[in-house]
Length: 138
View 1 (tube, rainbow, N blue to C red):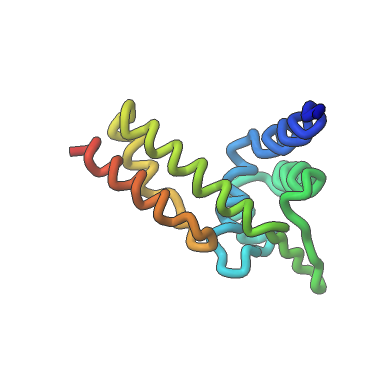
View 2: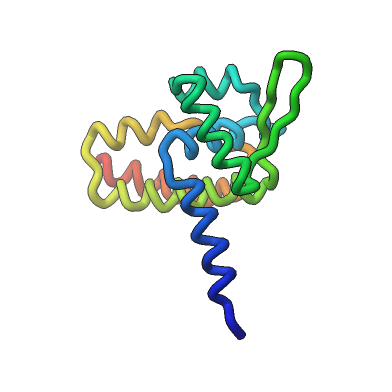
């Protein structure tokens, strides 16, 4: 069985995710119960210039991670799959576990202020990682 094309597709997905602003956009979307947010909220959350945000959203859209709808002048983006929120939870748990081992006080503080990801169901993974975090900061 030749699985190389599947790994290439997966690599393309990870390339689309490989920018801090894009990850931030996805976390904002994942934090919303409807997995959606208007562009104005994404601009506010990321602090990105509108043209830069537009480019990041286009990358995520091409990768099939988000889609959009327009109602009048408002464009809303949403995660195409709740599984994307799950992926973000696992990535955050990994990050927190790694930070628990090597974090500076500033990194620990920044991690404590990441937005909650209630749209994902793998909260137990995140809770476990945060418990590690608390132990490391003592």
